[in-house]
Length: 132
Image (cartoon, rainbow, N blue to C red):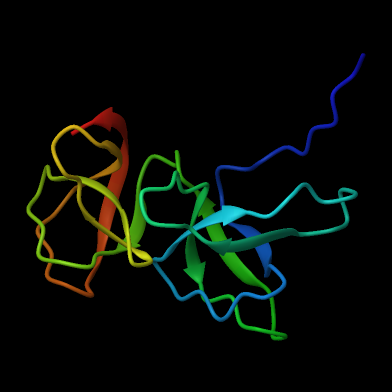
């Protein structure tokens, strides 16, 4: 039996805001809301919950009732992310408060900081699916 699939691209993808969500800004982690009905329907996203596994990082803000936003899949080789606290190059990061923060020892990390950054900075990240 065939399984319904919707291919993801490693480049930027257009996305819509999921129902009930407010604006998701550049660099914030997001998750997909369901599977689009067809190839002509865009993915809907919502803000990734604390400790959650982000599917994408927003590269152009997604506005309520506005134009489409853009995103990059979490496993793109390099992405931009908004950090919620001061981080150092090499820090493992997880989601907290709609931003990436240092992962607590023993918890799942989804990205690694490629550069130092201060709270509310956009920094380059690389994938790092590992335990902190």
